[in-house]
Structures are given as C-alpha cells and as structure tokens.
Length: 205
Image 1 (cartoon, one colour):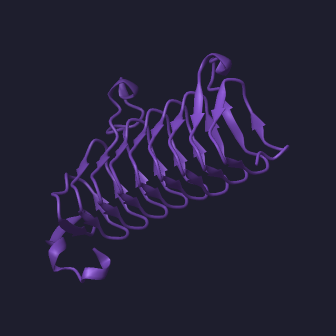
Image 2: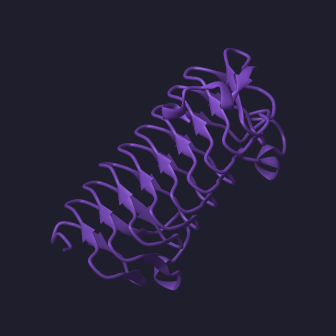
Image 3: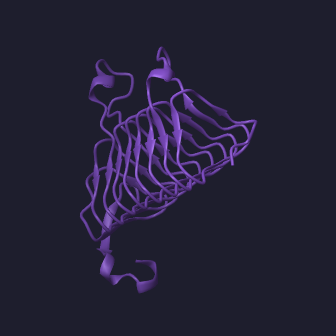
C-alpha cells in the first residue's frame, strides 16, 4: 500500500507487500545529483512510516521497518530484518547488516558499519570526525564498527573509528574513547571494562 501523499522518485524499485505511509519521500536526490539515474531499492514487506525520507542510491533488504521521520541518506546498504526508529538519522555510505535495530533519535554517521544483529539504543551518538572543522577532516572521516550482537545503551557516545567488539555491552550514557573487546561490559566516562558479558544475568545477554 503506497499512500497517495507519499513521493516516490524515478528509478525507485519497491518489493512486494511494501507499505509507504503519508508524506514519505523515497529516492530523494542528494545535492547536485540526478536521482533518476541512480537506482533505489526497497525489499519485500517493508513498512516505511510517515515522514520517513530515504535518499537515492540506498539499497534495503526485506522486512525493513522505519519509525516516523526516520532519515536514511544516499548510498547506504541495509540488510534484511532491519529496524530504524523514529527520528533516527543514518548518514550516507553506512553499511547495516541483517537483524540490526537502531532506536529512536540515534545518530549514525558516514562510513559506519553496524554488524549483524547489533542493537543501538535511543539517543546514541556515533561519531566519525576526530577533529571536527580541521583541515582535511572530510577526507579522513571514519565511523565506528559495532560488532555482531553488540549492544550500545541509551545516550552513549562512541568516538570515531572505534571497534565495538562482538557481543559486548556499552552502558547507558557511556563515552567510549577506545576499542571495546568482544564479550565485555563497559560503562562510564571514559568507558571502562567492569566485567565479562558472561557474568550478566542470562536474560539480559
């Protein structure tokens, strides 16, 4: 079902059973680009909620869901069974693997990689500029990598280029300034390891 109030640009391919709600824009052109020359693909069974904007050149797999007002920039690669929450921002050139969940109002900058089934909590800020506004900063942007099944708690901040190891947990409000080992729990500002993930109660792993 495609709302008559949605805008679907040229060269957009929608899969089967896709729902696009009111005031969404799919295949939006980025500055100086003719979007009609760039293919935008949305896989089967997507549910794109109202006011979501997805830019041209992004490819999204099956069973995608967005919250209201989500923003996905150009040339992202998004796998199957991915959820992007209300007012979350995914900048361009981001890779999101299968099963990832990005919660409301999270910010994911250019050149970030979110690996299989990782979880990014509400208001999380990932960063990619080590020295903002410095000379050559745009040529040296490097987003974080969040490993498989890793969880980043609400309001955490992760500095540029860091690797968050597989199955790790970053506590809410933490500021991560160095790589995080797999299977560890880190908390605080700066974030420090407090225990192994194996020592947490089973239900929160």
